[in-house]
Image (tube, rainbow, N blue to C red; front, top):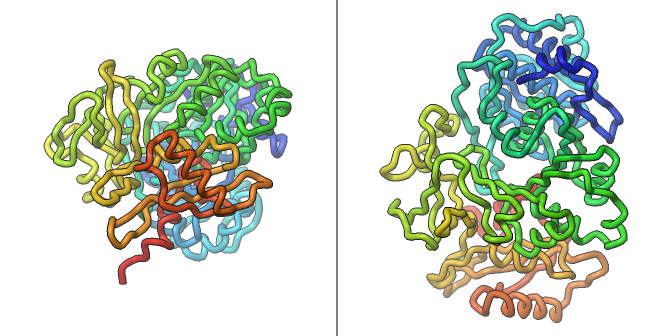
Length: 511
């Protein structure tokens, strides 16, 4: 389903709420605005499969632009607005965008425009040199459907936390927007989305999960409540104000929620929630257990990727029986393999491969080598994003870490996630990362980078206490050799640690 359907059946229902600006958008407005942009893009000569790049903060117009592309057979690439102008310009060029839409409210938009050779540039919310004003050029376009509507797609770029971002390309479906995308509709059904859904989106729309689940809400006729950025207490206030039924989180958000004073946590009524969904990174067991105790058995987890290579789901009840698991496959099975591609026994950790339907097989845009390296050595329909984990006897998947984050210290494999999960609930820490740093004898050793809670001062006694905290829970072998106190850790707004940035000072580029 798409906005055109609901513009007929429930035209005045609110599709989007943006609390920060107090703007609301009805299904009629969403349908008409997306139609106008679809006509404008067609007038520029864009045809099925052509690309549009979007550099925009969380703004109600985001959905208008997304659905304009989805209903006219175009590929949309949302760009992380925290990127440096040169990195953003690389994505605009790499995705072969013929149209760039950029927000005049973003710091780097003007510089992005100067760096980009994109033929058509439209500015949103103000003037930018070299750009046409989006609101003006769109306004004269018809509000009815374009001819020959065909379903478009979204080509996300990987986060680039361990290398340069890559476009995740998948073939367009031979279907109409009204028929919709079966994968999006499947997500909606999996988590009980319907016309009564009130979905709280806590993260930036340029990321795959917030955009995908928000679109699933609209595809099911519900309402999206879109935050500008995550704030722990504000999210609780919005749940109460809008009677949120569905919400989405990452583990760092759970940790921030749990570290609110008890009086603040108890101030807000969160009982309207029926599905609190989380993903993006492994969740520390103690964190998830506390969230289930607080919100009840509504915490649901899934494991997926930008590439959509494999998908799991696990309910609170299942998780309590299989603590630490990210669930079982909802489709084709997973396989755990060693470095040579041989399948490993139950319980042994290795590279996680998922079977892929050849009809929807993904590739990395303009990077055949990366596409090849993601494929299993001798099973053509198995692919991996580089995560490491294991399966139990019942088929539940457990994540160990990313293979690229593994620390090899004196021949011993150390997965930082295990240490990070242990330190995450230390009462004096706000955030933590563990990386490998060079060592003359062992090759590399683990070092902890920690952000202290307000009012806590760094000291050698605290460092010793953190080492003892890890040793008591994990054993001496996993204790970081040293700790460094930092003011803030570089996380993406979706909660992922940017370990490329963290490692850079210790592992300089070879000359």
